[in-house]
Amino acid sequence: EAAEKGGYPHFMLKEIHEQPTALRATIGPHVEDGLPQLGVDALTDEMLCGIRNIHIVACGTAMHAGMVGKTAIERFARVPVDVDIASEFRYRDPILSQDDLVIIISQSGETLDTLAALKLAKERGAKTLAVVNVVGSSIARAADWVIYTHAGPEIAVASTKAYSVQLAVMYLFALRLSLAKKTQPEEEIRRLTAELQRIPDQLAPLLSNCNEIKYLASQFMNSDDLFFMGRGFDYALSLEGSLKLKEISYVHSEAYAAGELKHGTISLIVNGTPVVALATQKNVYEKALSNVKEVKTRGGRVILLCKENAPVPEDVADFVVRLPEFEDIFMPMLMIVPLQLFAYYMSVLRGCDVDKPRNLAKSVTVE
Ligand code: G6P
Image 1: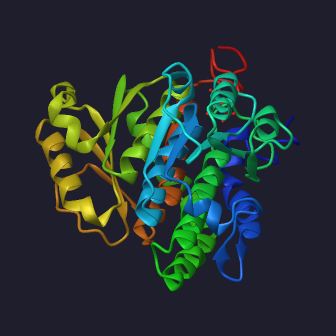
Image 2 (image 1 turned 30 degrees about the horizontal axis):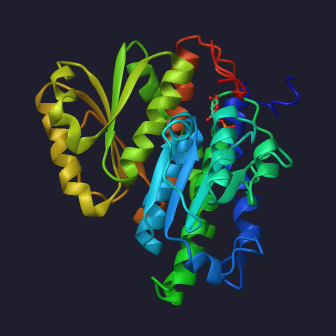
């Protein structure tokens, strides 16, 4: 097993570091002459233009990738997108028609609720596209069309590289749909596709930044509760950061849309309450900072994650983690690295079984 870990103490850390490679393998085959392509013959411009509604259905981390996908698809291609938890979708008598596309996301391709949701979508006449990592898995076989992610085998129960490549496919799909629907100029789609291809290189400084994140984990390792907050893409990432943390370090955590704090959660913020605030999006940056200030005023102990050159007033945060300057819409793909590392080091420092957390399974094939 030591050999399989390639010199890393845990599979999770190895898989976090494999993200640039996994992203290159996933993005590369989907760019042709500088433009996004899905590699699915049936998904012609005509077929894509006929899609009226998109439903993204998945469980766990894959569902969180779908939340990023929703924002990207709606922003680029202006098609309405719902994101659903598979176990909710399948029992909710969903409204579907042949103009609907159901995108099923699954690392393993074997999650029972996700597979059942896919079968229901087909029965109701919707078109189905699976985004799957394991070739030939049940979900890959059952869907009308498949786009494979190329994360390679993921051993650690907590999903890391599989999430990153799911995000990449969500962006590729959003760009391709936008190209078909002409909602963005072709030149802009070319530019964004080129930026997407640059992301694997942007991860290097984040991955070599382990000591900073390890230090932060050492400062927060004895916390009983920890809150994550953000707006827009940063909210979707807050959910994933919070899930990673609780899965493997057993620290109770909640993620909040920052604007929603004052509708309840802020009553939980007292002197010393740890809060991880994500603020990478220019359109809501000031709003996000004012939410951080609200937390700080009540004694919150804040880690702020923001871009390299973002203005941060003094006394807003106790710790500031700077991310490379990059296109706002792609910041989720950078942000995820420090969040994964934070969860990882919290788990290590608390003496937890990082790769095999209690009660969890890599693939859930029962209801
Ligand atoms: C399990 C795993 C999670 C994963 C979820 C969905 O709960 O522990 O890491 O996100 O299943 O799995 P899938 O294989 O469908 O992506």
